[in-house]
Length: 219
Image 1 (cartoon, rainbow, N blue to C red):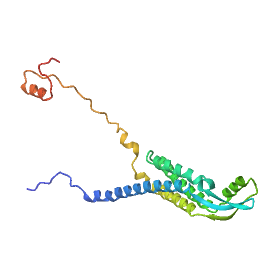
Image 2: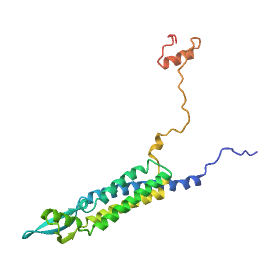
Image 3: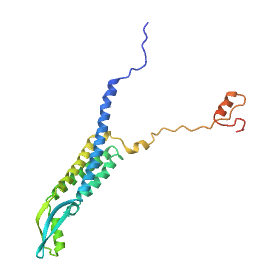
Image 4: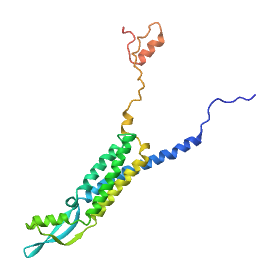
């Protein structure tokens, strides 16, 4: 006579199907964090470097002047800070809120890259410095030159943009920081105080001694 076991047989195919999805979520999460943090760092550092240089006529000679990225435009650095805040906020919200924050992260990167690219050929900041230095409001810069730092800043903005796109695409699978601190709503079992040992039951006396209690003390 044959017997059929009622124990369910595990399905390895279902487990194997969820494993790649979990691994992909971890990879996209790591990539988003790395790209977002690296991009913001690059933008903030590159914005403080010299973007352009030139010479202004002063009396009978010339004066060399330089303009940093912050002098040309403050948008990339400001948007990088917004991007960093959005990168952290992505893990504090879920659902539609996460999509909105991920969109803000992507827009911050796009804006930082675009403003840095447009500032690569800007000369207004140097003209303003020339006017302040010479005291002549009509003074301008000649022998104008630009460095590669604006394009480095733009590259950092693109990294933030990619992090935002990853958050938009895979963010719904990423964990939430506050999830581990949330209670699931199930009541916690109440702790009950141990009852006094029954002197007529030797096993109760031994258990009380094991707990370090005095079985002869009255409750």
